[in-house]
Image (cartoon, rainbow over all chains, first blue to last red):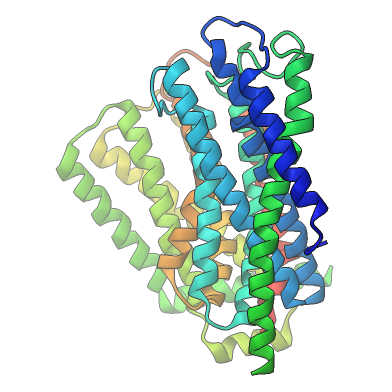
Length: 223
Length: 219
């Protein structure tokens, strides 16, 4: 799977489709949102990919705790890393969007705060890893933290923004993912272009990094 | 039944140690008193929202200081001893109960000092006391587990703060929202859902600690 090529080609094709159809295709006309609704293919997709990658990272951390295989640890950390990169991109695309719809890059919206907290939690994960020198111990303790952080984070992202007032689409009657606001054309591009495209691209980046780490691991064990 | 007895024995050992050394209690008490005095010198008697924010930030820092000691003061030899005589889950639960009690005491004391120095803008005192007790327990549970991680990493309070502050923000946000209800004369709805959510958070933290602590334990 790591070295197969077909899914990398597929990723490029998906993304080409997303960019061309996303920028040229028709979208429903909404007040205030106007053309910024196209951000669905970029901003929303970034957060979906972040979710997917952090879940994969969690699964590998759990596997590490069960089997103590250093390869699982490498997978867990690389997927978390890629997830954080997508999170940063999601935050940036979101603030650019907010500049044109809410009037400011950052307006302390609960969703923005939640996103920032999520990134801080995962940055702390990398700090924790680097603070430990013994590789076995570092892997185990950071796997424990990863599980704990994930469990603390997901209620934050899913529940708290729903309890408080937010301007973000999807909250308080603002437009979002329902049939009234986006139409079949957009849904087609989103589910069959953007999500798989970005996810596969992220997966590609991950596998490259994982292969480097595996080589380093091999070298260390032979030295 | 035996496990409850084990937990109780370990809990009593914590209290006994605390009584003999009286280190963390008076240390943290001094810390609380001097910080509140500095706050008083800096801002006199602040308005409601500032008071509320300062109070919860204070709780956070008290917790980092009080709870951090619980794992860090154990020497290597003593840890090996515990490893050989007791079950990790009992050990963790005893620590959590002790930390919750310590934090409860500290937060009530700091509330008293806050009232003395920074004025008392709270209009529902009983409700506020209940909320701060609940909050103290919630915060101490999270930090107990983080202290266990930080103790393993052999890098004390600094690492704990780095790990803990982002994780605790959601809980603190909920607590501040909840306690702001105690300031206003008009009763606001939404209190129950926040309490329920925090309660679920606490249960989740306890369950995760019980599951994950054995992995931290073995070296």
